[in-house]
Length: 624
Image (tube, rainbow, N blue to C red; front, side, top):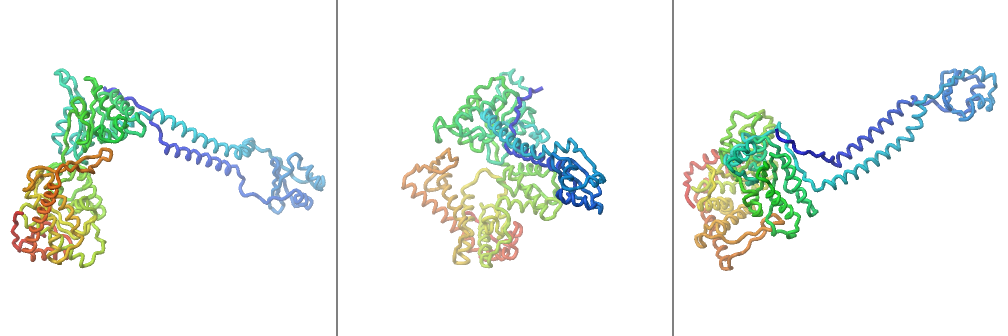
């Protein structure tokens, strides 16, 4: 049986204390009001003075007087009930005699003396006195409790806010993680070591102490870490690296020691540190030098990972999507010496991921997840989970009982571009310009052999786009050729060329296309070495300011003469693509007009509809 990890009594947050204080105060006031209402005698009768009472007795109007302490209840012969108060230290008979009531009238008058009960007596004294005291006491209790909580937090400031995963009802295993075969194979060794370390120790093998999960956002790094814990069945501690760092120097190092000691006491166990680049960035590159709090925290992590004994069964899992900024000391053998790469899923893996996320959801018979997978290249696992959820929401909004193909396709465009803005008012002239613009993109794409096929053309505004042409590759690819890049450039300039040819003018609708085309053309020259004139070399060294966490400067490692040549090559790439787009559109103006007319009528053209329109014009795809 695995030893139980040490537990701490968690501090209750201030918000909870506030709620309890006001709840307690509310109950005290409620009880006081209830007691007051309980002992209050219904509606009060009219009050008269003793002189009036004496007059009524002399007139023979009084039938009975009830004395309760200093309170008098007077019942008249006509059924009316009155109230009065006698003097505190004087008897009623003496008082009425002083007011001129004859002895004979007093003798004939029925008098009933009631003794005040002890409860009523004490309540009449304590409630007005104790209620304010109770409120003041509750207020002081709350203030002192807040102060005591602050003291406790001061003593626990150096402890890590570590979380132990105990929700085994949501236990995740490798079967719940689609794809990532190589990554799961790497981690199966870790699971096997935690289950049976003896067979590794007998042969002298040493399992890595640290495993670094690297991959783009949304590829399942955290999910895979939870799957390791689910497979191994050991305590799984998790926290974010940003929780180590505080404004006070030394707190991060203290929390690091506390987190590692907690994991050691619960061994065999797993300690998962998410987004480790928050503290694991390369030292000496930021502000503050060696005394920086973040760097001291990193130093402590390095020391703790070196301090593990060979027999210590604690595995450190860490995740990051920025492995390029991590300190080399963190990645050396003996620390995070095993690196697991998580890539974006391919078409088969995307289909498997969607099957997992669609479990428990009603699916329409026409839903083909294989077709959906072909329409989602570049989607991560998180994107696909969001896609299925958006489709489910859309199905509910449309009154459907199951998720169909139409809802999935609509959700793909919503995830990529944003929701449709059908209520946006657009003039007929702008609709025509947008239709020819998107028709230009689609026609150039259909006229180039190396361009991706047209999947959908729409003039319905989505997000910031007034319209869009969706081009999707036939298959997943990791590499892209120069011819494919040049075809992409021509497609980007198809809308600009179409506007110029049809309307003899250009609009701001092509601004984003020009931006993307300029960026791609410069990358062909400076990053990919695809310029015939400048040859196979790269230009410019990108430097990163670590404390800002993003690339903001580029070192110019070339001369002014080369800079001029780079500009000329970029211009040549764009000019060549522009001429090719103009040539395709000029030689197929009838096809362009047919596509634009169909867009004006239907607003949306699917892949089959678009190619059915251009087929009669016998468009012959060419190379750039």
